Amino acid sequence: MIKIGLTGSIGMGKTTTGQMFVDRGYPLHDADATVHRLYKGAAVPLIEAEFPGTTGPLGVDRAALSSRVIGNPEAMKRLETIIHPLVRRQEREFYDQARADGIEMVVLDIPLLFETGAEDRVDVVVVVSADADTQRQRVLARPGMTVEKFEAIKAKQMPDEEKRSRADYIVDTGRGLDAAAAQVDAILKDIKRRFAQRGE
Image (cartoon, rainbow, N blue to C red; front, side):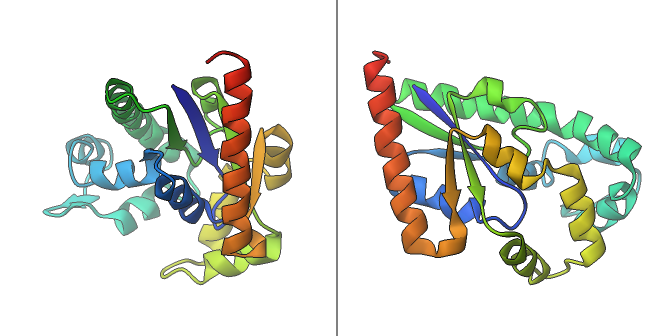
Protein backbone atom coordinates (compact mmCIF):
# COMPACT_ATOMS: atom_id res chain seq x y z
CA MET A 1 0.00 0.00 0.00
CA ILE A 2 1.20 3.47 -0.91
CA LYS A 3 1.07 6.06 1.89
CA ILE A 4 0.81 9.68 0.80
CA GLY A 5 1.72 12.23 3.45
CA LEU A 6 -0.28 15.42 2.98
CA THR A 7 0.90 18.53 4.75
CA GLY A 8 0.98 22.30 4.55
CA SER A 9 1.06 25.32 6.80
CA ILE A 10 -2.07 26.84 8.30
CA GLY A 11 -4.40 28.44 5.74
CA MET A 12 -2.81 26.80 2.71
CA GLY A 13 -5.88 24.76 1.71
CA LYS A 14 -4.85 21.36 3.00
CA THR A 15 -8.34 20.29 4.10
CA THR A 16 -9.85 21.15 0.72
CA THR A 17 -7.03 19.36 -1.08
CA GLY A 18 -7.41 16.32 1.18
CA GLN A 19 -11.09 16.12 0.21
CA MET A 20 -10.04 15.99 -3.44
CA PHE A 21 -8.12 12.78 -2.73
CA VAL A 22 -11.15 11.36 -0.89
CA ASP A 23 -13.41 12.30 -3.82
CA ARG A 24 -11.13 10.21 -6.04
CA GLY A 25 -11.59 7.16 -3.83
CA TYR A 26 -8.55 7.28 -1.54
CA PRO A 27 -9.19 7.05 2.23
CA LEU A 28 -7.77 9.88 4.31
CA HIS A 29 -6.73 9.94 7.94
CA ASP A 30 -7.03 13.51 9.24
CA ALA A 31 -4.79 14.17 12.24
CA ASP A 32 -6.67 17.38 13.15
CA ALA A 33 -10.05 15.62 13.06
CA THR A 34 -8.58 12.87 15.21
CA VAL A 35 -7.47 15.45 17.78
CA HIS A 36 -11.00 16.90 17.83
CA ARG A 37 -12.38 13.44 18.62
CA LEU A 38 -9.73 12.82 21.27
CA TYR A 39 -10.62 16.16 22.89
CA LYS A 40 -14.09 14.74 23.49
CA GLY A 41 -12.90 11.29 24.51
CA ALA A 42 -9.67 9.51 25.42
CA ALA A 43 -7.55 12.64 25.86
CA VAL A 44 -9.90 14.42 28.27
CA PRO A 45 -8.78 12.86 31.59
CA LEU A 46 -5.12 13.05 30.55
CA ILE A 47 -5.36 16.74 29.68
CA GLU A 48 -7.35 17.56 32.82
CA ALA A 49 -4.66 15.88 34.93
CA GLU A 50 -1.91 17.91 33.24
CA PHE A 51 -3.84 21.18 32.84
CA PRO A 52 -6.52 21.30 35.58
CA GLY A 53 -9.61 23.30 34.74
CA THR A 54 -9.29 23.03 30.94
CA THR A 55 -12.01 20.41 30.48
CA GLY A 56 -15.72 20.18 31.17
CA PRO A 57 -18.82 18.06 30.47
CA LEU A 58 -18.32 18.45 26.70
CA GLY A 59 -14.63 17.54 26.80
CA VAL A 60 -11.63 19.81 26.41
CA ASP A 61 -12.37 23.54 26.49
CA ARG A 62 -10.17 24.53 23.56
CA ALA A 63 -10.16 28.24 24.47
CA ALA A 64 -9.09 27.49 28.04
CA LEU A 65 -6.43 25.06 26.88
CA SER A 66 -5.13 27.50 24.24
CA SER A 67 -4.74 30.20 26.88
CA ARG A 68 -2.49 27.84 28.83
CA VAL A 69 -0.27 26.62 26.01
CA ILE A 70 -0.12 29.30 23.28
CA GLY A 71 3.12 31.21 23.70
CA ASN A 72 4.35 28.72 26.32
CA PRO A 73 6.69 26.24 24.61
CA GLU A 74 7.11 24.09 27.73
CA ALA A 75 3.33 23.71 28.18
CA MET A 76 2.87 23.03 24.46
CA LYS A 77 5.47 20.28 24.67
CA ARG A 78 3.58 18.66 27.58
CA LEU A 79 0.36 18.78 25.56
CA GLU A 80 2.05 17.24 22.52
CA THR A 81 3.44 14.44 24.70
CA ILE A 82 -0.15 13.54 25.54
CA ILE A 83 -1.71 13.97 22.10
CA HIS A 84 0.86 12.71 19.59
CA PRO A 85 0.96 9.06 20.78
CA LEU A 86 -2.86 8.92 20.77
CA VAL A 87 -2.99 10.28 17.21
CA ARG A 88 -0.30 7.82 16.08
CA ARG A 89 -2.30 4.91 17.49
CA GLN A 90 -5.41 6.01 15.60
CA GLU A 91 -3.33 6.41 12.45
CA ARG A 92 -1.98 2.86 12.71
CA GLU A 93 -5.48 1.50 13.21
CA PHE A 94 -6.66 3.38 10.10
CA TYR A 95 -3.73 2.06 8.07
CA ASP A 96 -4.21 -1.53 9.25
CA GLN A 97 -7.91 -1.41 8.37
CA ALA A 98 -7.23 0.02 4.92
CA ARG A 99 -4.65 -2.68 4.25
CA ALA A 100 -7.09 -5.37 5.39
CA ASP A 101 -9.66 -3.88 2.99
CA GLY A 102 -7.20 -4.15 0.09
CA ILE A 103 -6.90 -0.38 -0.46
CA GLU A 104 -4.03 0.45 -2.83
CA MET A 105 -3.30 3.97 -1.59
CA VAL A 106 -4.14 6.06 1.47
CA VAL A 107 -3.59 9.68 2.45
CA LEU A 108 -2.30 10.72 5.87
CA ASP A 109 -3.12 14.37 6.57
CA ILE A 110 -0.39 15.40 9.02
CA PRO A 111 -0.17 19.18 9.68
CA LEU A 112 3.31 19.05 11.28
CA LEU A 113 4.66 16.27 9.08
CA PHE A 114 8.20 17.61 8.68
CA GLU A 115 8.30 19.20 12.13
CA THR A 116 7.57 15.85 13.83
CA GLY A 117 9.68 13.66 11.52
CA ALA A 118 6.60 11.94 10.11
CA GLU A 119 8.01 11.84 6.57
CA ASP A 120 9.65 8.56 7.63
CA ARG A 121 6.15 7.03 7.94
CA VAL A 122 5.02 7.82 4.39
CA ASP A 123 6.15 6.95 0.86
CA VAL A 124 5.69 10.37 -0.74
CA VAL A 125 4.99 13.85 0.60
CA VAL A 126 2.52 16.28 -0.96
CA VAL A 127 2.81 19.86 0.29
CA VAL A 128 -0.17 22.19 -0.09
CA SER A 129 0.92 25.78 -0.56
CA ALA A 130 -0.20 29.28 -1.52
CA ASP A 131 1.30 32.75 -1.50
CA ALA A 132 1.76 34.49 1.86
CA ASP A 133 -0.95 37.11 1.27
CA THR A 134 -3.55 34.45 0.45
CA GLN A 135 -2.53 32.44 3.51
CA ARG A 136 -2.85 35.45 5.82
CA GLN A 137 -6.25 36.48 4.43
CA ARG A 138 -7.63 32.95 4.81
CA VAL A 139 -6.41 32.49 8.37
CA LEU A 140 -7.43 35.88 9.74
CA ALA A 141 -10.93 35.37 8.30
CA ARG A 142 -11.43 32.39 10.63
CA PRO A 143 -13.69 32.91 13.67
CA GLY A 144 -11.72 33.64 16.83
CA MET A 145 -8.40 34.00 15.01
CA THR A 146 -6.12 36.85 16.01
CA VAL A 147 -2.86 38.08 14.55
CA GLU A 148 -1.09 36.95 17.73
CA LYS A 149 -2.51 33.44 17.48
CA PHE A 150 -1.69 33.26 13.77
CA GLU A 151 1.91 34.33 14.37
CA ALA A 152 2.27 31.82 17.24
CA ILE A 153 1.02 29.00 15.05
CA LYS A 154 3.27 30.05 12.18
CA ALA A 155 6.27 30.17 14.53
CA LYS A 156 5.75 26.46 15.29
CA GLN A 157 5.61 25.54 11.63
CA MET A 158 8.47 25.08 9.22
CA PRO A 159 8.59 27.96 6.69
CA ASP A 160 6.56 27.26 3.57
CA GLU A 161 9.54 27.62 1.25
CA GLU A 162 11.41 24.90 3.16
CA LYS A 163 8.40 22.58 3.02
CA ARG A 164 8.17 23.14 -0.72
CA SER A 165 11.85 22.33 -1.14
CA ARG A 166 11.41 19.02 0.72
CA ALA A 167 8.20 17.96 -1.00
CA ASP A 168 7.85 15.22 -3.59
CA TYR A 169 4.86 17.10 -4.99
CA ILE A 170 3.30 20.54 -4.48
CA VAL A 171 -0.34 21.56 -4.84
CA ASP A 172 -0.63 25.33 -5.30
CA THR A 173 -4.11 26.29 -4.04
CA GLY A 174 -3.64 29.97 -4.78
CA ARG A 175 -4.82 29.48 -8.38
CA GLY A 176 -8.33 28.24 -7.63
CA LEU A 177 -10.10 24.92 -7.07
CA ASP A 178 -10.03 23.70 -10.67
CA ALA A 179 -6.29 24.21 -10.93
CA ALA A 180 -5.74 22.44 -7.60
CA ALA A 181 -7.90 19.51 -8.69
CA ALA A 182 -5.91 19.19 -11.91
CA GLN A 183 -2.69 19.13 -9.89
CA VAL A 184 -4.09 16.37 -7.65
CA ASP A 185 -5.01 14.27 -10.69
CA ALA A 186 -1.54 14.71 -12.17
CA ILE A 187 0.09 13.79 -8.84
CA LEU A 188 -1.97 10.61 -8.46
CA LYS A 189 -1.14 9.58 -12.02
CA ASP A 190 2.58 10.12 -11.44
CA ILE A 191 2.61 8.30 -8.07
CA LYS A 192 0.96 5.26 -9.65
CA ARG A 193 3.47 5.33 -12.51
CA ARG A 194 6.44 5.60 -10.15
CA PHE A 195 5.36 2.76 -7.90
CA ALA A 196 4.37 0.55 -10.83
CA GLN A 197 7.90 0.94 -12.18
CA ARG A 198 9.27 -0.11 -8.79
CA GLY A 199 7.01 -3.15 -8.78
CA GLU A 200 5.09 -1.99 -5.69
